[in-house]
Image (cartoon, rainbow, N blue to C red; front, side, top):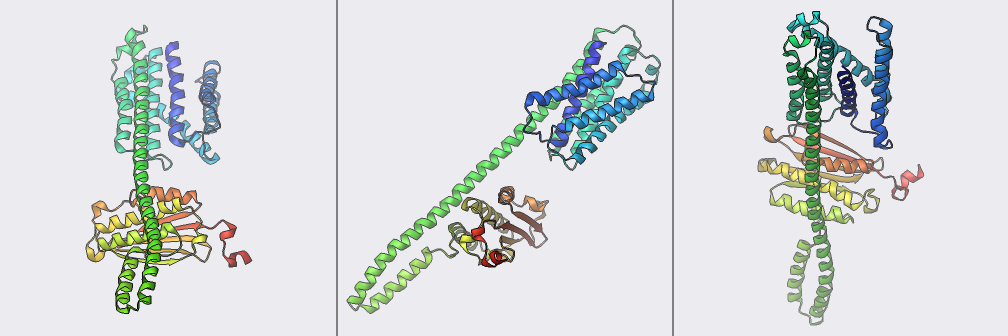
Length: 440
């Protein structure tokens, strides 16, 4: 029965590995991979030595030592992950509770389905009972980490598929012919069935994990491609604004030369007509906003025109100095561009009479750079309303990450009539601080 003992300890080690990876997710980066995996082997070796040398199921002290070593070994393995001490203690105790409860659960199942086989204790019966309890422990781990608040959000289909194999394995163990347990001689079928079930569970789990990981990479790559296209579009707008500004400067020189000629020749009526035409051309070309920041001026000009094309009332309030903006133009482009894209897209789904966007960009009384963005959601169809405020548009995640990168904070809130996003980024550069702040 050595093969069953080896399988049992391999299974125990893999269960702890799966549990901690699903519970904490983030490994400590300063621990090399060989040392990381060796820690699991060492921890399980300690438990194996205790089981072989000191285990006596008839003595309560032996059971206490085994449970204590199990909790301590799990707790020690928690230090391989980035998490708090409180969570390490709690999750170590929870794992031991699941392990104990799974043994009792499988024993109860056997008593309810096939109570007669418990009257004839054989090495094979002990192995099946042990492995059956581990299948139930695996199910507990999957279900617990599925609903854990700290767990990763995954698709419902993934969770269902991950539960199918252990459930079928459990049914196979329960439905085994009774004579397999009574026989003192172990057949080839008895020897091979447990390893096959074990390999099936391990293989299925890691294949599903790889599929999930690949799916996440595909989604991330798609988001990056969308963001790259978004940035290309915004920089194209910036370059267009810059070229228009250069053209205005170039044309203004010609206008001055022409105006001087009209004055010299005293052709005042023609001069009046020419000045009016050049003024209209200048008004159509020049940026509607003049904060001194190229990103803000160009993006607001473009989105103002886009709002007008879509019958959206676009109102702004700007009160800031360009030199005091605490973030790079690239980050500002991501934040402002994504916010306004979301607003425009949301307003397009509304009736024309309900379409409006309000934007405020300013330095507040606490010396923080603020962007308050609000758009109408009145009578927005329920099927396209976001479930939570953080899912308002595809670019919201990028905005949130960019704000956090600049040590800022983003708050979003949605009501039946409007969706509001408030962004606050501290001004950390002393040169950008206000005079009042410096005096304080």
